[in-house]
Image 1: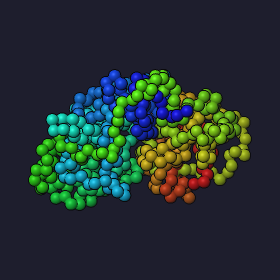
Image 2: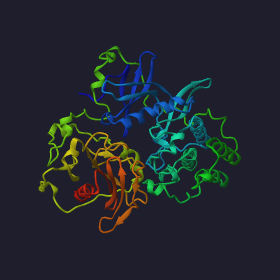
Image 3: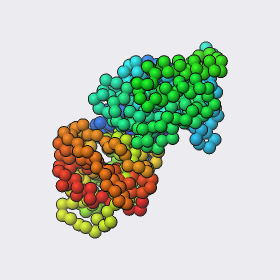
Length: 528
């Protein structure tokens, strides 16, 4: 069976545009309005996670709050027969800034002119200011989230820049109550990387990093972890730019938010003025397309044929962004070992994002997580009441109470830093065992890229007491913090360095510290 559904709701699906940690985006066709659209669908393996479900819908609500031509519009929302929500948005037929211009990649595209750079900064800045005016933070401004779309005006067809992907977006009035560490290391503001309460100045910092890239032809920072982004050194002077332009961009990239520009609009006006004072007028205003129409980018094409419209409901049974859902019996690991998988199961298996909301939201913060090695073979130790669980690659293993295997995920995950698949394992007493208010128990293990242990560990405001983090040396140094008085008892976070460039993050939620310690002591990695 093809992984491409025939329809999503009333929209005829043409092809997959891309997949991320939380969702898959499809190019579809609105037959009623005779128009191509992009349909973003929550990934199949997150379907039963209430927290992720709500967060997905929040993106649509945030986008609907804003009436700006420079923010991707949401046209519709719906729910598939399996309960997964979807958002119907404008189709960005000219791709992203990351796809059009990446100076760090071979053949990374033609550098934009100063006028083109200012045009995209003005348009993205206008979209960002519109979000802020409506009380919404973006929190992930970066080249991949700058989308381009053809629009028709009095001057003919032009290319417009828009801000998209508010998957990390957050209402400003909520940002002080609950802060989740997220973002892209080379573009995230230090205070956001440190899990402080960000405000609109954090988005300005990200726009400053974008301005540095466009105007200088190279990124301001080359961070690979949020730990590095949390304490950045000032960037080097912008090559090829006058001191006045450099000073304006540097102010947006100030370490202290109080030293930045008052708002995004003021920053964009300042950088525009500095560039034009140095080079003279470079364009006629923000309507200038930042780049010409790109004929190599795939367009929507003709509408679907009548045959494509048949089978209006057969679509939704096809897996979107992942393999077919496993049954409850498939998800339950037998005590003493992982459920056996057939050869056909292995062939059908694909990298999955994890049924673990907290992980996907905090991982960037612990971008230095390490793996924990115990030199013994747990598989040979059969202990009554305990289960040995492993990930599908056999890299990660732990021994847990048998009741913790009610829900198991073992197929790997994609780290937010580089979107590469790494070994991961999640087992728990219920699907929501990682939710803040949950009394469930379980363990999450995930390998990630990183060469240093983090200075800061994930916080747990739902717990009454958090002990000071402690570190251990040796061949595999680690950092651990214990939280007590949690809804389910005790939560322990541990990060261990298992290789020069590899870390393992371990989170255990347990009824008591004794059980948590037994699980921590049993964690094993192989082949790293």
